[in-house]
Amino acid sequence: MDYFTVSCRYDYSQCIRQSHDLEPASPMSRPELFPTSDKALKAGEREPMIHSEILSHSADILCTQEVDRLERLVPMLERAGYSSTYASGVGKKHGCLIAYRASRFEKVAHKVIAYDKLSGRQNDQGDVKLGLSRNTNNIGSIVALRDLSTDSAGFIVATTHLFWHPAFTYERVKQAGLLFREVLAFRESGGYARWPCIVAGDFNFAPNDPAYSLLTGEPLSDKQLRSIQASRVVHVSVDSSVPKTQPKTEEEEGEGGGGDPDRVINNSRLATADDHLLSDEELADLYALDTKVRSAYEEGQRGYLQSQGNAEQEALTCYGPRASIPPSRNGAYEPIWTSYTHYWKTTLDYIFFLDALGSKANVAGYVSPHRTADVEAGLPKAGVCGSDHFSLCSEFHYTTY
Image 1 (cartoon, rainbow, N blue to C red):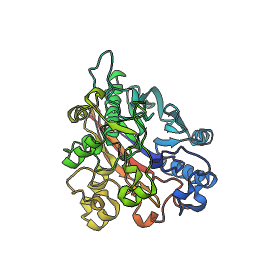
Image 2 (cartoon, rainbow, N blue to C red; image 1 turned 90 degrees about the vertical axis):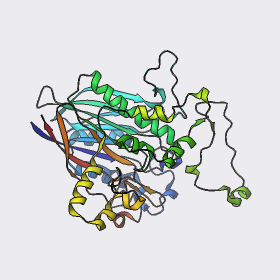
Image 3 (cartoon, one colour; image 1 turned 120 degrees about the vertical axis):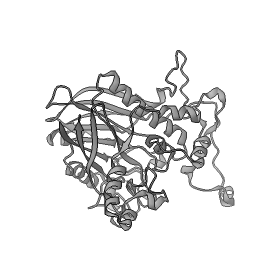
Image 4 (tube, rainbow, N blue to C red; image 1 turned 45 degrees about the vertical axis):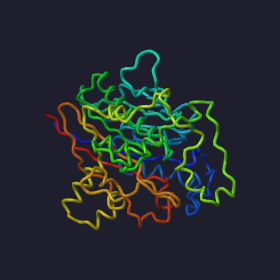
């Protein structure tokens, strides 16, 4: 039996710069971070653009992050024929929402996973050692959607917004591994072995990050291993005895002590053996899944662009040429950008998927990534995009056997 579905990921962000750990607000609480966005910073301007783009793909399944203003989003989705499930971390003012066509799917199970409460060691008993470097309150949301056209077919769908701080590589690697471990455990425990998985969201890591390499089966480079080791710290949110970092004086900043604050780990100490952070081997074990993780854009763009043999087009739409990732390595064909503002520009968002027993997925189509020329003024931008992230959309063709 063949059947089709479309998965769409859209960041319903209120366009707050994650690297400053700000919460969504309306209107923008830090407009100086978006000097080219003008009136697009106002919720009244931004929201209609976001709603319009969400609906423009006519997706069967929608995975959204940094969602607030539910009183306006959910009714809009319901009018368009969608049901939805929302979840957020403790104290968070925004969360993750999964929407699905009510005429096609029925939610039969839901689970929220709190990364700060999960152990990376599956065999821990009793006094569990979490291996936590920082409390983040980030979550993953997983639903089981039964296909209403049949009694036994469906999908496992998950979305997440991983911890934002670029320097906390260890914690983000652990969170991504926990998410995929829990997705597969959810599928197994619910008796959904034949249901494919779609895991889409804002992962806050680039295609050359250790987490991406571990997910897609690439060996870690020495540089990637060093980035994990450098981030094995314990933050004051985990150990209250950690002294807070004192701000540098203007004189110290002028003597070369400055730099990008998002690349500096503050209010933390180096981890010791007593902190039980996961080793490189234990992190790798988290990713030892019995199902291959695939990326819709990596496979879709790789297949199409290689068949065209157009290196110029690859340079305009793919991450690899921009970041010097060889074409043979996974991640080279991810979108050149998924977030683009005046001050920061990168690729952070993905539609991952995992096959199931008795079925095979192929990427039948995808929405072309924005080229740099389309967005070089910086997002959000009136008439262009209401968020600082782009929407991603992919169509899957599933063949059962």
